[in-house]
Amino acid sequence: MTMDTTLDHIAINGGRDVTGDIHISGSKNAGLALMAATLLAPGTTTIEGIPPLSDVNNMCRILRCLGADVSHVDDTLNIDTTQAKSHPIPEELGGRLRASILILGPLVARFGYAKLSLPGGCTIGKRPVEEHIRGIEKLGASVNLQDGYIEAHASTLRGAPVHLQTPSVTGTMSVLMAGCLARGVTRIQNAAREPEVVDLANFLISLGADISGMGTDQLTVVGRDAVLSPGQYKVMEDRIEAGTFLILGAICGNPLTVHRCKAEYHMVLIKQLRAVGALIDVSGNSIVVRKAEKPLPVDIKTGPYPAFPTDLQPQFMVLLSLACGQSQVVETIFESRFGHCSGLQAMGADVQINGQTAVVSGVEKLSAALVSGSDLRAAASLVLAAIAANGVSVVSGMRYVKRGYYDLEIKLEQIGVQLYRLPAIEKQQVPTQKQL
Image (cartoon, rainbow, N blue to C red; front, side, top):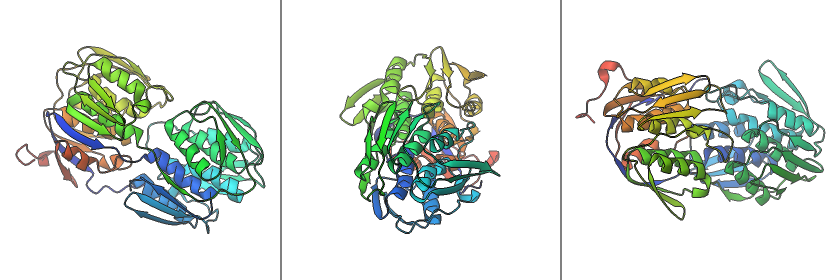
């Protein structure tokens, strides 16, 4: 898998408070599912609020490969799937994007056939596709996994009970979409409850689907013989981007106001931020965060929604690295999600890893360093650490950040972060504070 490495490094002059307003972009994770779901509705569907992130651009390429007409202007997508056909998706497309698996259900449901390469994405664990395969098989498809490709056939999908072994978000989404065109009733048990799943369900309902149970672990889909109808929809806000900025506010907000941020999506995070000592005021869909002057240690354990989100664990660890005491972080979702710890250690953090548990002993301050992010959230956490650290740090791996954070550098500059984008960096080329 190749990625654009242009301006892959960023130099940050840290150790200063941030203040001002942040406006959260539309959700990448929900948006990718909505894009896949347009395959169920021949015609032109308009989705508003989806920023042109690299993952979104990759999904656009996949839809075009299938014959869809896709235009993306600003944050509005127009997708016409009238002429779409089920073509094999090559590795150079599917291998770039974990969410490519989301087209499996819609393709089999509408065309009776799908062939795509095993999906790519961040290297943070196995991320198995078994739930997708098992779910589509329960609805009557035959699936073959060979030579790095998934191939599925079905003359007709039929509704059935589908019990997910784990509450997989994308697994739930796949079965939900396929069930819309399956004959009869599909009941998904142990379904993911994430707001992104609810957003997909609401989108499908707006296109004519019959779905109930949103927000619970029991989803019911009454299938139909006809395809869905195209429509217009605005994607929900990006929950993980919002959480990242809430954590930044707890580290050095003086104050930081995060707009388009529903507190109901962040109840566990807000509880933990307050336990650390951050001051948080909620006003409608805006949240004001003031930094914890002397952060307190807390223990967190990641889990499916509404538990603490795994996608915010690396960022929260930055805050814990500055706490006055010892914290424990238990990761239950991915087996390789401590890739950011080496970067934090290079900046002076005291982090000890034992299996799926990290013990974080807080230090008084972090120091500038050259660090590298190995995946999307790891790189984002190191950006937060660089903002907190004294001196000029250089973070590489910004290509990963661009997969999930739209205009991050611009938003950071707007709240007072001093930064400089770099196409390449050697140790002797690190900018000085005067250069920044």
